[in-house]
Length: 494
Ligand code: FAD
Image 1 (tube, rainbow, N blue to C red):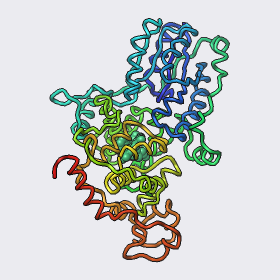
Image 2: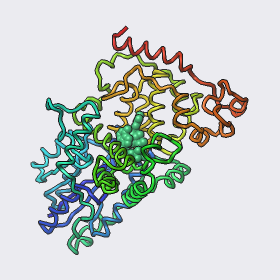
Image 3: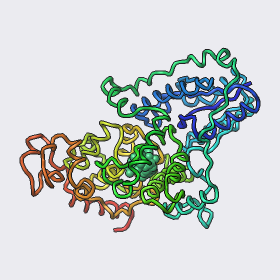
Image 4: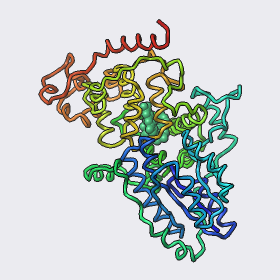
């Protein structure tokens, strides 16, 4: 007999609900615990997972495998070509190992949720009790509902309910409870599992040697790195978070999204650590930076709750059905300018180049470029959503879809459609000294003062032209008018 834990987006040992339940079950039955992870090229394709993210996951699996081996627990990793074949392959492995219990943490995307339900149902006939448990959120989807019994579609009241829930259900962390040691003969019995290799990235998710070098030095994998980052943030940067979190050049955020999205950091651990760092030892009240940061981590929960409750957001549909009729543009030339950071708007270009070079973009910049694509260029926001997934190391369906819906005003609790960011004002406000622009837009490095925001504008010099920096691809004033008109038409409000 054995108990199996199936790792997905929960690539950690610490504070991992399904893993700990699996461990407790194995302990109570005195049977070995076996861990598995399935690499699914078809899932990567379907979810538009970026190559940099796949590389991060595979490197994290190396760390996880080593950590588990220290506890005499094997991590078996296998590639399964067809995603539909995954449930049966897992049942097959359970049968081979004589495992009658399978534990896993729930994923809330539509296909994944269906798969968890199917496996729970069909496990019985395969002789396996499947336990799919909520883990990824601080408060599980389904726990909060408004006075009328519905899921909230506005963040603020939802957040108040989230806090109230945590006041009455203080969350318990399995912080220092490693899974049980396997029986001594585990190494001998599961020798081939201990010795299995972590696969290479599938062909269409390969990085070049240059990219491997670049990304690997930027993004060390694994849960130890995640906790170290969190600890450093909470002892140093969080004190400036309230004032500086909107400044992309400020290096004032935690940069833990890659860890939260691949599960090398548990959101519960993150929130509990922030709470404990607060002078009040509470989630609200006390230090502004900490309270603000907790409310940002809560946005992640919020979007997962939305996804679980309104699964059609997974199906390329806007959250607000009345936005279905907006006539989007599909101008590939303009889209390519946006993708490559050649729009002629320095703040927008800096942001896109940061994404392309690092696999990450600051939140303020994400909002600015998303608004620019959807409103200034009127390009279908789903093309931007997809481009983000193709390039982000922290790509997470719910947060990405939520962020795009917010920025394009088509989503849950969105910016009103008539609020259109002015890309030049965003630049002056959030990159006043042009530090972010100079870092990422090398052509503009030598431009001093305010001209950096608008290098062909009133204070222009010849520098931008000489360096080959493009002129603005659209005029914001005109595109603003066009956008208002188009949204009104789409909404039938003209
Ligand atoms: P911090 O400011 O330190 O915040 C801590 C954590 O809180 C983040 O790691 C993240 O998990 C969560 N968080 C913060 N802001 C948000 C937010 N607005 N929405 C949801 N969660 C939030 N985040 C992703 O993890 N994956 C995505 O694919 C993603 N796509 C986005 C697309 C758009 C258009 C927008 C506007 C935002 C997107 N975000 C996404 C949210 C946010 O930009 C990133 O989580 C944040 O920039 C990560 O940096 P950090 O860890 O330093 O954040």
